[in-house]
Image 1 (cartoon, rainbow, N blue to C red):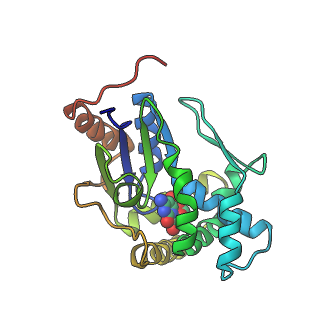
Image 2: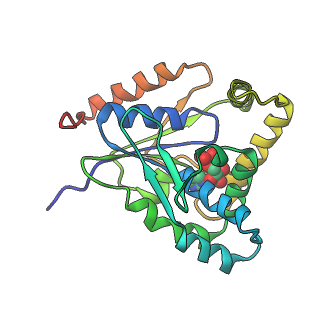
Image 3: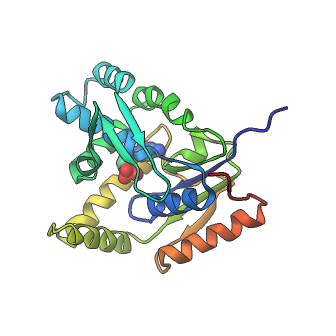
Length: 232
Ligand code: C5P
């Protein structure tokens, strides 16, 4: 039997450092990277650009199935996301895109329409996948499943700092509220809710630096006998 291409999943709510951790792990291992949130955000952006109704499920599925989306990644650099041939990295990161992504992500038909796109990222020598349901739905047979958490206050503080670095002034209380609303929606939805997989390793990153989280993960990966791809 041919062994399945290995996958490491990194799930959790926003602001826990899972995107950065997943990216560091994929660089370290020389594996592919899937930022599944970027797929939901891209669909949200398409909905905004086409003035589509988020209550029109048929239209949303049609947009999801036809989404002209490409990822360009170079090891060690941020992945570039192209929607309809245009680089949309900046636009995807807005709060409105995140909120609409979380609303449409609660629709089962939309999730089903985007599933195959995510599975296709599983390519040799391996994949690090970050999102909400990577370990529970999309890659249930992943070799290692990490689930990152952090207190809502700490996550709001991190988001505030990120925005400030971009020259955007935001109210920390409002951010805490927004994060809370998105978490509630992601955790309480009927399909693929945000929950750790039964076999996930849970890491509370509230008092840890990104480097500490990365080292903790690398230690577990090493103990599992997973080696970096040196042929890159
Ligand atoms: O991770 P990110 O903040 O970019 O994700 C945006 C939204 O997309 C999340 O709030 C969530 O509702 C949705 N999402 C999801 N399943 C994933 C990844 C993201 O439902 N695997």
